[in-house]
Length: 464
Image 1 (cartoon, helix red, strand yellow):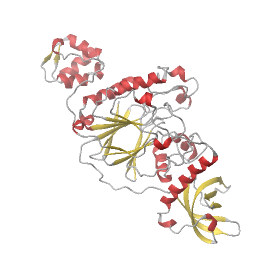
Image 2 (cartoon, one colour):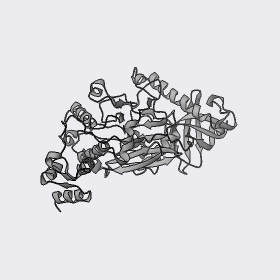
Image 3 (tube, helix red, strand yellow):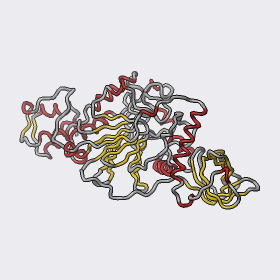
Image 4 (cartoon, one colour):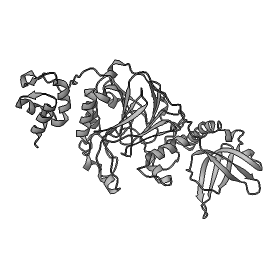
């Protein structure tokens, strides 16, 4: 069946009769993708003629639709971590020592609340018998029998630990151990390893308003593999403001907003737009189509025009001024609340490291890695891997605030699960398979949008 006949049959299902010129009008504006909008807009008319169509608005103007429910509410967004403290002032050994000391203190404070670690001992004060200590992991090795041997370090000293049951640990994570200390060989024989962990959150955190949050990532504007048709379909869905879209008050975008320049070898072969500022201008134009009652919150990723060391600051002023006033720019990671819900949004560059470091992990099990991050209370525990860390006085990659919603992106896969009543969402991308992904035999899962309804505390996944 040709396109014209398909359009006419769909219109007849909705009791809409049109002149032939009107079918041409629909095809010019996107055909079947535009058809749902046309049906919503002109359903009251018995016969639609070309002369009866509303005058087309200028390209710069937004399409006006019936008033969605979300437009009746005010924004309630509170930023819990700003950009002021993210400026790098040094880079020497002492600066990195301050960073790791801050990590130790923050995570040790959490560990000390666990019953098993009450009355813990500093390493320099160890005496024979049962001990409880908190330290940072170093020098991990596995014996021929599968036992785990590692060193723990705190500000007072170092001690070797032996765990016969085996497990996995990562360098630089902060843990607690319970075991027996032998003064003969200066070793702790570990009975239990404890990570900082997160509590099980209370259920029924629902809000009174029927408000939803749409969650996406990795738009990669400027790439030849950018899925523009799917993206426009998503924008049209938002603009119609019908069904699930009627409640969308916030749009969260988890980094890699544009494809960037020089991110990987021969990238220019896969670029549609060869200037990074033009990529952001294109993205800003797309976001102008999002209804202005929707607050857009976005963080940078490793393809964006910020430093690669984490945490990453917000986009520079010359880029931010391209966007409308309903856009909120946050650093990576971004920590904020929406109507009382606490969100942690991290682009997720460390996921590449953790897939390789944690036994049994894969890109199909990203949620398991997110669970580990929560239990370790850190987004990128190991120093010296693919993630470069900024030598700041504070470690902003520690998870100080337990989120209600934890969002990552970066790996172009979509996963969703609940863990201890925390929503874990690895957000979908808007880019088809690149040459690099094909070489790695990785197939992305694009065009999916997670819709979290804060009134019901439920997540729905839509495909575009």
